[in-house]
Length: 386
Image (tube, rainbow, N blue to C red; front, side, top):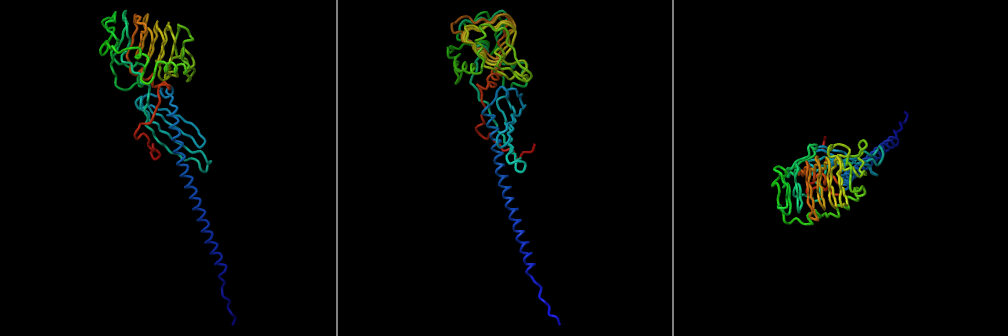
């Protein structure tokens, strides 16, 4: 009888061991890979949040009143920029002209096709902070003031007719004329001056009324106008025409006689509200034209012939008009420092408009800035599905 040899187990054991080792190695590699993925995902998620925050902070720090002032109520616009680690996109929505909501999305592009693509979104509710310039009447002045020949001053608050959709808030009626001495008013027609009341007296009107505006002074406003390139003193004492100047969608703000476009808020120069300065001693605007913003004249301002201005006019000397068709929608503050006669004649109109004054300030980057609300201004929008 042949002796049977026992079956070997070394080979199966070796194969089994290799299988177990392979499983352990594979599992270890998979777990390590997952750990790397989780780590990278966590890192990129935090990076995406930082990119979104960078975008929101950049828009707030470099608030462009000229660009963002063209957003109609409940409208929005989007600003995009690229940084080293990714791309941010901020959608700015105009809630009421003073409150803006920023929806900022950050996307990671670092790491190539394999690792990039993480996105996060956050929202910031912000409020515009702006220079405290609040004219107390349609026409604030002192000394002898004459309004005659069909000229009108209206203190009832009114929005410019072409600005529908750009004005909000409660209308605030003011006096038509506020002066230090109503006995010095002359030439008033039956309907020449209206308001709440039509005219009023304030004995505290002094030099500083026309040179101090909250934290800003006249000299600071003049310096800002010069810094913005809108010192029009070099033109001389007479300006023939003030009109918008644009090429396509580009507003040529360097043109000295381009003071924005109050007739077309959505046009290229519709959201351009410059600070304009003339050193005097007299500035005469001769013919038909139109502009907006804040006009500073260190002397006498003489309007002639169908000039329309939306915003605030501050004159350190005499404010006078001649001819018909001159219109100021907003307010006029005329110091009449030498106590010469303020004279509004012809068909000139000064109309109180809170919206015109506020837009002139809000849309000038030198006079306004945006900040988050003090409480609960930030929200994580990453999980919100549109």
